[in-house]
Amino acid sequence: MSLTSSKMLPLGSDAPDFKLMDTRTGHLLDLKNIKGEKGTLIMFLSNHCPFVKHINGEIVRLANEYRQLGFGFAGISSNDPESYPEDHPDLMTEVASKNQYSFPYLFDGTQEIARKYQAACTPDFFLFDAELKLIYHGQLDDSRPNNGLHSNGRDIREAMDAVLNNRKVNKDQKPSIGCNIKWKT
Image (cartoon, rainbow, N blue to C red):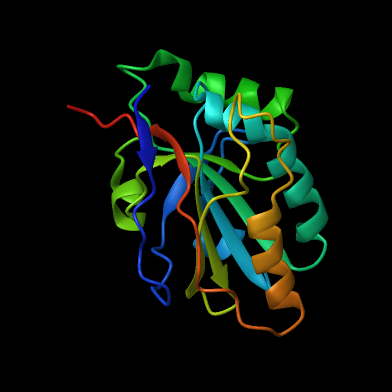
């Protein structure tokens, strides 16, 4: 595991479109299938990353709460399953079931989508507004494996609450920290 910070994609950037397989259902989904009326959260995840394992419960709570308020959600795994078999799409299906993901868990086998989003680590979070403009790219919260803090999703919840209350999202955003994306060689 290599500790990596997310790259700060410029706020206001358009959400890159995609068409990826949802490992939960076997269906191909694109951004318009995921898009929420109020906003859309794209999360780069990994089956084996301890940073993702630490927050799985909170991202499920977040999705279950905010989907009802008009937000769309998707998890994307872009790790190379040849080098990291724990991230194989078949195991993504198991992880989604075990953690009760209520959102699509998409497989980016070519890694093209991770590159378009400039995703660098897992987890890496991208919150877009109703027009699919980037309004938040940062950490879920201050918790990390072994730092003693319980994951509460505070940073992303504050950004989503700002959208719901017609306020500007705070531009002071801390990058996410986690495992580097396992790029193909």
